[in-house]
Each structure stands twice: as structure tokens, then as C-alpha cells.
Image 1 (cartoon, rainbow, N blue to C red):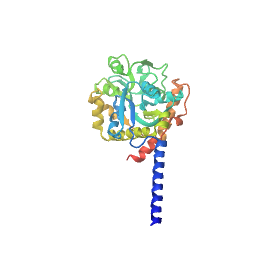
Image 2 (cartoon, one colour):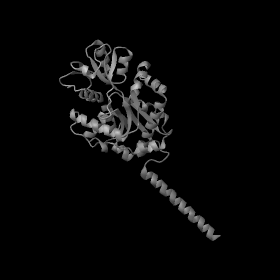
Image 3 (cartoon, rainbow, N blue to C red):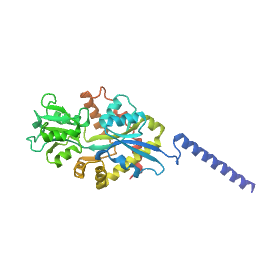
Image 4 (cartoon, rainbow, N blue to C red):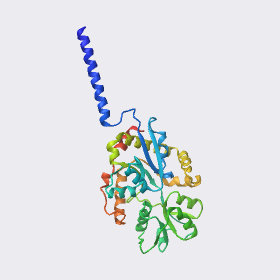
Length: 327
């Protein structure tokens, strides 16, 4: 009897000790399981950067999420570095610029692929890229679309400094400039190419995606080195929400379109533009190769002074775990 009592007491002591170890482990590795996580996420109000607006459908019920819309990827990156955001969308160009300056950002997932187009007047005599010689093309300097435009011209043997006139015009004004005849072409992101086609004053000359160069890459999700170090559970939840929302929207296109219409663009334009947009989350070896190609192009165009260590720009551990758990 005494032996049984002694064994029971020993088992109880071991059990309590193990519980104490588990509590210590939770404290050391991050937040307790029932502690609320607060997340601030940045993005744009566009069809191609829409995922954060449905993150709420996939977050833990106990946690708090605020999605903050911006109009400029540079402002989102600044808000991230200042601590106002925990997680944000940004263009690959902005991410590379930040890394080249030594800013402590980490890419943890992809966001969007495709989305660009080189548009010319519908009734123009421009039917081939070589027909652009002597023409005026609108662009926004230092953007992904600017670099893609230069890729198109380079592959056709057109010198951007002498064979064409590049004119700086805001994306919002490109359609009107094309319709009025003050420019012959523009390179931009959606929905402006789709608006030009739908309204009948423009046609797509080329979708500037080349697998041997920059490919389809467009935008990504970033956080900070400090966020990863201090709040890995939060980063994991944010990446999980991103993966789940991307999968959902790509499998429910009408819901994607209807949600994007809430941002103020007519449904007919959004419907057309989604044909030239892929919402994404995955980052492959090919993605990384194309990001490296983009960085080299940015250096050539003097957008950055030095090419950063692109491999160090990524932390894919959270994405890999999300892909394993979310089917």
C-alpha cells in the first residue's frame, strides 16, 4: 500500500514538473496560447493587392486585425519600419530598394504576379514593338512598369534614349493622354490597360513578361527582422492568413471581383483586369532568380547604387510551414 502511494506521489511530482517545463517553454518561445495577438497590415485598395481585406475571415477569433490602406508602396514600407505596421504588401522594386539600403525588411510571401501591359491607341498603326520607334511613351520612373517597358524596348533593339520619347505621366492620367493623342503608348499596371481596352481607345501591344528575365513577378509581403525575432507567432498567423485568403480568392473569382468593386472601380473594368492578374503567395527558386534579375536591371538603370544579397532578403520558414499545414 505504501509502495503504491509512493508511486502515485512520484507520478504527481513528475507531472507537475512537466507542466512547469511546458509553461517555461511557452514563455521562452513566445505568447501564451490564449493571449490575444494584435496585427496591423498594410496594402493598396486594388484587385491585385486585395488579400489583406479578407484576412479577417481566416484569423484566430481571439486576435485583433486592422488593415490599413495606402496609395504608395514606399509609404507602406516606411510605416512598417516605424512600427506602425507589422506586415505589408509592397512592390518587388520597393523591397529591393530597401534591402540595398540595408533596411531590415524580410520578404515572407509573394502577393501578385503579372498585372502589367504596354498599351497603344486602338486605331494607331502600331502593331509591333518595332513600330514604337519615334513614338512617345508614358511611364512612371522607378516603378516595376518602367523596368518592364525598358525590357520590351531592349528586346526589340530600341534605344530608350534616342529611338523613342519617354514621358513622365501619373498612372491615373495615362488613359486620358492616350485617348487625346498626346502620347502614343503607356506602360502601367491594372486596371488602366483594361479600362483602355474596354472603353475602346486602346489595345495591348504586349504583356511584358519574359521568363528568361524578370518574368511575372510584381508584389510581395514583407515584415521586419525584429518582428520575426520578437513575434514569430504573429508572423506565422499573418502568413497563414495570406496563404488562405489567396487560395480562397483564386478559387472564388466572382467574390474577388465583387470585393474589388467596393474600392470604386466599375465591375466591367475589374472583370477584364483579373484576366491579367494572378494572386499569389508562393516563392519558388524561379521567383528568386527573377528577383535577382530585377535587382540587376535596377542597378543598370541607377535606381539602386548596389545590388543587395537577395538570398538574405527572404525568410521563407513561415511560408513553408503554412504550405505544409494549409491544404
